Length: 381
Ligand SMILES: Cc1ncc(COP(=O)(O)O)c(C=O)c1O
Image (tube, rainbow, N blue to C red; front, side, top):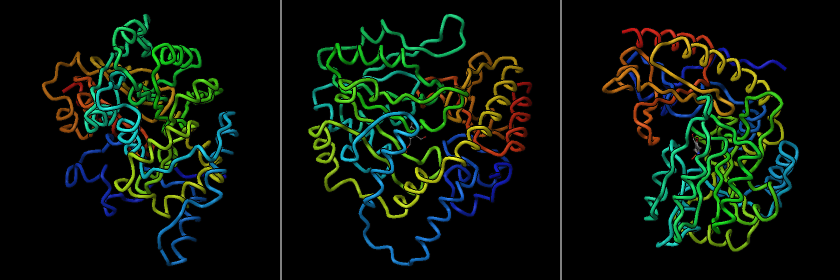
């Protein structure tokens, strides 16, 4: 089946967060992480059927949903999880905030690595837990971002309790290898840390032949100390439908998560369940076509940025996000500079990395080409 990723309907009449930001200006929005693609037809059909029913009363998770998620985890990653392990959440950011409260006590510390998707920084702060950070480093050949194992060891204190892991990694586009994950697991084990692994981008591995390895799938001990946070929303472009989930094999951990949510976190909306079920059951062919399209976009971005003086980017193994180092250009305000040329990028400062920019390339290729031409103009300005 052919899917159209080259055209998309005008998003401005839908109060799109992405397109609202530069309303009234000729700026191509490439900041927040959603896609300028219509989602899989199977999902639209399922939603249409549900909308036509016309009654939108309180809705439980459909009985077949958790088993469908688990079937997809086996099918896609060879990971066997029990449907009982799933706790439904209205968003993954909610999940990051909930685990920061639930899995570290008030006097315990949370650890993560920079640069990082901003809610990893705000969630521990919101929970009034001390956050320690280490910097990811560039490999010796400068081609990819890696863990600084010594810095990680140095950052641990007797109070460190929770490691917030982003896998695949937003914003560097790394899909951590099994070796790296095993080393992280050994580190967590040695220091008695729990791990919350945000795997929202797991369906967007762009490297042919590579498969996402869920952190919790490494072995039984890792499964027991990990909460995996997932959602169909990134891969299938459903963030406004508000459905995500935590997977925790440890019943006590699930109880702590549910307690932290009680009375505060709203249940998932029925349309979110409908879309998630259709995504995991019927979304595969669309997802394959999407990944192929994104791979083409990624190659364009990497070649386009490599050709420009003063900018550097890295190979994007997963996600539709390119991480760009603009420090050599010595711009007082990099975001404003590129916006003035008609491209809206995300400010690296919010990821803990001033002077960097994040570019979302999940858009039709003609729009991407235009954006890259504008970036070229901005660099030479
Ligand atoms: C790593 C990561 N986690 C969480 C989210 C947001 O998830 P949600 O919209 O379900 O809160 C994003 C969105 O870009 C993300 O990149």
